Length: 365
Image (cartoon, rainbow, N blue to C red; front, side):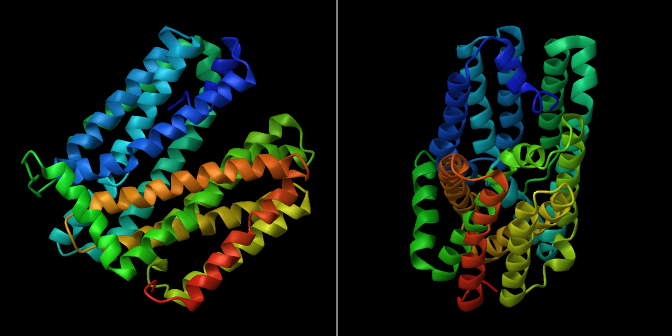
């Protein structure tokens, strides 16, 4: 979506203050938090494919509002629709892919398939970042918005072609019953609970730090035109981490802990270096965290045995959203007292704690 790298500029050009822009981000996050688990239960109760093509259409409608009626309330409505889109897809995609592969006797390929899917998505982000500037210069925000809406329509059309062999529940009480069934598995099965908690522990911190990487790169003293180049390096590291998901699937508990430890040390060293060369270490760290994110999802999918797969995956997504909001708050507080590199290094500490817990724990292998 070409709007992604430039939508903040659209808001500022419309006259929104930093405070009003921040309120839009909060609204976006709250929408995801409120709808994450209910949408997962809905995906278990009805067609998961339905949610996967409906979500992009809602997101595209939101982007159309932004460029057709640029105003605070249009931006707010667009963020709500974007948040709904994310909630509808979260949990539904993972559940559909895993169960379709399981039906084919190929569940062991889940990490490889999802890793490649993430890699394609991350490559698309890099391509959109590169294309947004020229398209904006040629046709302004209407052209960028039209391209983004078209991307959403193509995404929805692609989703309609995904196979789905499971039969939705179809009764009136299915949504509530599905939600209760999914949550009961968390209470009953300790291994499911541990795998579920591992997802936000691995995903949230580096996912939040990604929003601050331009500030980290800028603090190294490179000229502003060079900042996007180093950001592409970081995304290249993330893409490499996704592509390594298949071969790394055999990592056991200790191997997973080592991966988190090495990634955390690379993050700390890269942040504290304060040099452009240190960004390569940050890229290496983000690649490791992305790999760990996919592997944590694999562990969760393998632990789930009941019918509430999308529900439980959405619970993990809810945990990630909540922790991410917390990281934003912590970064804001620390960023006012320390340089960005120091804050990045401090954010490596939770990963060292998680690595220690994984190494000592059970049910995470």
